[in-house]
Length: 89
Image 1 (spheres, rainbow, N blue to C red):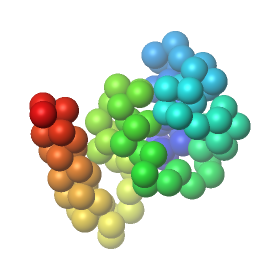
Image 2 (cartoon, helix red, strand yellow):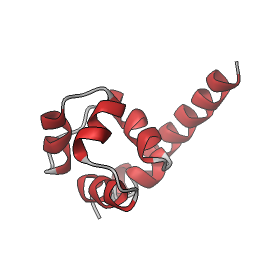
Image 3 (cartoon, rainbow, N blue to C red):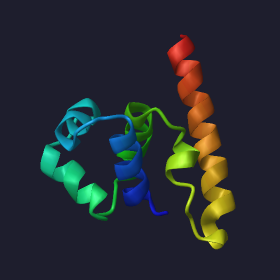
Image 4 (cartoon, rainbow, N blue to C red):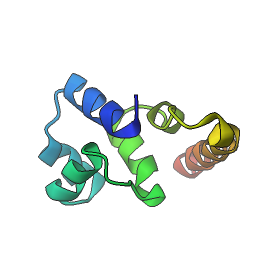
């Protein structure tokens, strides 16, 4: 499942509308809709999307080509650790 499909599935499972999800992320409803329809998601928003949908960033982007998967998951792990430390401050 790609990121767009995963976002939609998780959002619907949580009972959230596109508009509500977009507001929590801090983007317009049309921008969020475009992401769910497959438009490229800026990396700067991926962490916030995962947070709003209450899933880990690695679960959100889990469908990555094997070529880039290891590097990406390592980077995600480092970002998640840094965010946890910031929240604890």
